[in-house]
Length: 190
Image (cartoon, rainbow, N blue to C red; front, top):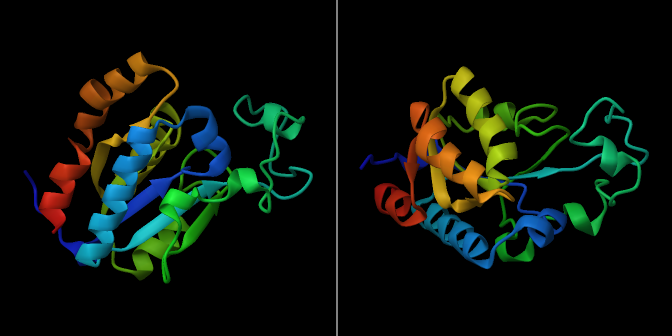
């Protein structure tokens, strides 16, 4: 098992927001993410909360974007001020923990995430989020291209398709990241 330098490792809690947790969340995944949050805070590691949200009227959403077009046409309120886009209360940001708002699937695209991470000297990311095939996959790929060292917290990720979740964690993610449980990661950062 790898050990992680708390000062250079950030925990990214991605899309753990009310509207997504209500739809795809699993109490065990939320509990695992809360444990990761507790471990990061105890170790003094930076924590960044990432949420997807749009401006009123959805000017960022193209009708050609299959992922977001349904939201823009009324399939839920995912504007910046909506309760649907607030970080879930079980993972409420603490003092000094930035909340990054993104406009696309990846935590990097349309956000200032990289600026926040580089300003803190972060070189390693621990990824947790909903959905495994969405924000976790997209962020992992983009983070790898930006030369971050990566860990995926397997029990703090969820997906609407259990088979896709299994294949990503077992076959795809290990090519670019260490895939660990929250307990394994917490032991390495503590």
